[in-house]
Image 1 (cartoon, rainbow, N blue to C red):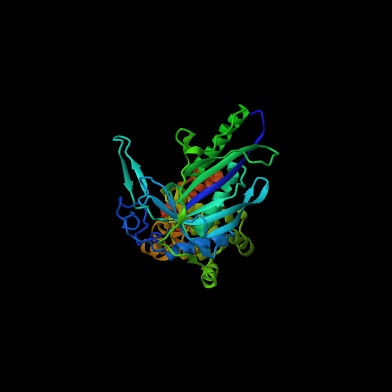
Image 2 (image 1 turned 90 degrees about the vertical axis):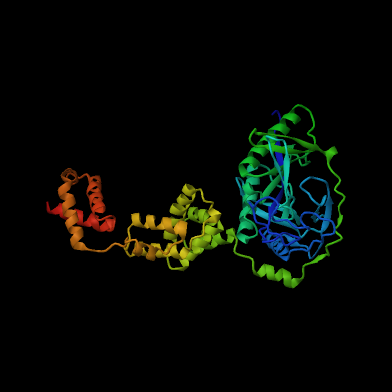
Length: 479
């Protein structure tokens, strides 16, 4: 590149809301079912069928709007966006063009240059389309309408981001906010969060925007980062060659690592929006708005500040715990049961994350109770179990949410303090490991491991390692 360029990036983020039923009918929104089982005349576009707005969709949209500092449109309407596509059964999509539910918001993100705001132009509600399934062997395409009519909000940012890292920071903040609200799981791999990237380049130091391109339906943070970096290079090469960037819609192929043209501006469709004649205007009164506002949960930023203030645990721990609402809930439940905050934190960022990784279980699916973790920590504090047994018991808490006290008693894992039996075992361990004894007397402290290991094996792990160490040292001192 002969010139130094700056990226100008705005995003359109589609988020599927996790209501039990679709936006305009009573069909289930469940993911992963057999094709075309969650379909009715409304969401399959049968003539004469009439939509009825799902109030829960509006509640969740308002909740997201409040959490992203938007102004809520008190008199909102729905419009028809007309286009033909095989997965669009009505040949139009019900959306909001003229009076979207939310406007003029902002999200604060952390960048390498400090904090900055990314403005939100608008957020509107709409219905999702169906899904096309392509058979690469036969060349046939099948249509699954289960997703047709699933409620979406589309969040449109201003072009305030300047790099892939800022884009990912914005998306991560948006994802965590919506997850904390309980409005969506925001799983990119399942399509419940989808991202379109609008991007142009301009010479650094200039204010005028360049010609933008739009890249559609990116479904992972890794793909988004690669796409932006690739598009930066592509546009820079065009500008360096003295040519003009064409305003167009592109699609990213993550396997091949490049994007290709879908349609140019000249091919863009005229959607012929007009107010939907079957849906009445949506009036958000004071009572409705205040009800949503009063039920807003504590979000991650607020939680991080409170944890630092109330619990005094390290910033690193706080960052990991609050990254997922599920982990934060377990942490708070454990602490509220009287467990030491740092000990609860250690079990979450240690064993919980390890077991999640080993079992390939999504962290959002972790559901054991913080109370059971607190009971486990109490058993450790009271030396009823040792660390080895605790980890064994915790694996069952993680997988089955067992009560650790009941599980340990049922499986005979409680340490029974029999000082006579333990003392005799220590004496036998010393007799069986003369080299280790000699090494210890020579100042080699690591040699104690062989003796302690012998005792732990003989006692089947049901003894306190600290007590074993104490007895071993006392016996060797007599020699």
